[in-house]
Image 1: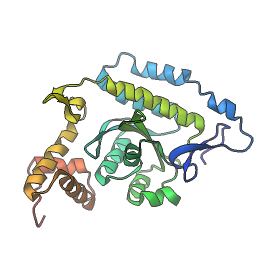
Image 2: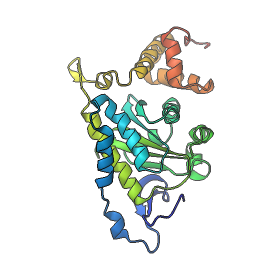
Image 3: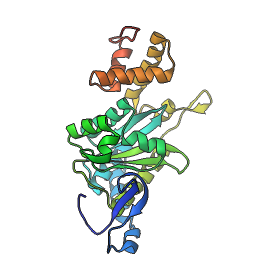
Image 4: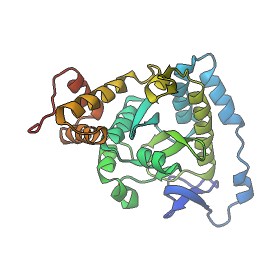
Length: 272
């Protein structure tokens, strides 16, 4: 555990780490005090960070606020889109890289939080259950100096639209207060995402128009998937799987390989 500040630890099944489904208290703690989460400081800092920012910049500002409010060194926000997380904003290049790694692998705390719609707290990626649950991502994360990842779903109880992902250089659990702060930031992030401009396409709202250029790099992923579908005669899921597999085999991100496909530097075929 990173520290004992008398606030308690976030728990789940199994144990304090993993998917947060319950709470575990240490002996002698004042649980009434723990439950009295005071959002004033987070609200004040978030207001200061986002004041005057256009809507498109607010997610990035909120990532920066999360790093200031919590014992983490990086933060990203990703949206759910056709089975692949689409990174929208990040607080640092390292955090952005690890978000892309999860998108490429189709695995990791971010992906599981989006699928389950509950917080996924990978408290120690160096050993134990978290390292075994996501062995490839854990290796990539620890190689980059990240030892723990906390993923908080965005949206409502019935619909998950994305995740707020927090990266720590030190293994350890979030306290109850820290988890509540993370969820508070996630709630504000959800409101900010819902306020982004929506455009209509063919009479409905789609993922691409909703992003409205905010994640334009990932447009290449969708273009590349379409091209691979034609080249291999497969459906979209298989094309995305082939893109991810090629990226992983060559130690690249799906986004980098997609760029090569769209620019005709890479073509998928029966013997490629």
